[in-house]
Image (cartoon, rainbow, N blue to C red):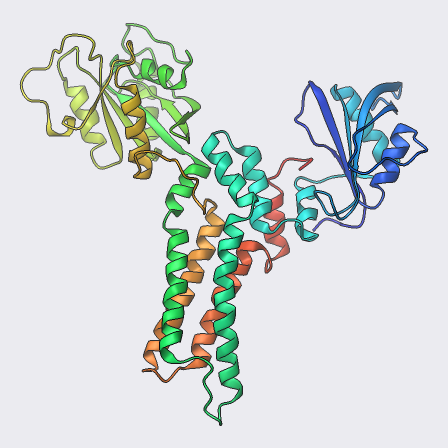
Length: 459
């Protein structure tokens, strides 16, 4: 892992130009470096934004750079990292920020690695591992629901829930250990009925946390949704409407879309990768045929297919082929152009009975379509409450902990009420180990490196 005894520095704001740019320092020399950068003899007052000037050297030309800045210092342990921290807010010129960064390094700082500030916060007990991962999730959030889920974990809601389960397991383990310490006397510090009830209670709590896990992953990671159908049924128009932007070319000429066009959008709180595809049909055009193959490939890997039909023209063989190709997967059937007279004769196929009827031109039915998309992906008509568990690492460890407790329950039952403490205790310890891996009280350097390397530099 990284050294934690030196002072690190990084630009904490995004790359590019902006009104402000922040250079963050953390470590034992952070205060000294802040004073040296601003040529200030009087110490900065803690947690008070102070106007100052910097005079630094440009990275390439070594010419002097001057800027007016605001410096705020946070003495340990009352800082983000738990160490002395100084933040220099300058104008957001990349040249100025690079000059401050270069000068800090020349004065003795080291460039921070990705996620190293949050890693120090974890190592210094300011954040547990769940909260540290939530920092990255909050930065990456692109929908309000993603931000709420990440902020809840940052506030410690999942940590508290796991902590309550751990308390119960520790109590059971301690009483079973005590029973093992007095085998000759025949003392049991917990009776069979109480042990069974306690194990059942722990299993219920783990089930409660995991009940919403699939929805949690969906909120955090989003989903891929492909819009498919025959040519000229309105796929690209629907794509543009859902994005609220004219991203796809729309013409009356069949086969206009010949490649995959993917954009992110927020539908019902879910971050969806929406894919506009070429119209699926038999064709001799080499380019269009490649587009059809890509559309079919996109359909295979998508979490949901939106099958678009055109009610203003008769159902054709191409429509039926698309419907058949999507019959064994999650889909939402959309009947488009309901503002025009219907050209369908007879009774529509059974799979069209529950279709969403929309008009992309007038906007009719689009709210219903958004609800159906959310329901098809999550099983809920609306996503209002942020899920407690969203991270696949947490889900896997909680599932392992539940399996261990279930094994402990089975070991107890196999003893016919004779309380086989050794077997139950081993499984309970396994469950505790998994829970402690979630919060980071028990973890490896390789895991920490893997987690924090996905952070941005400066966080």
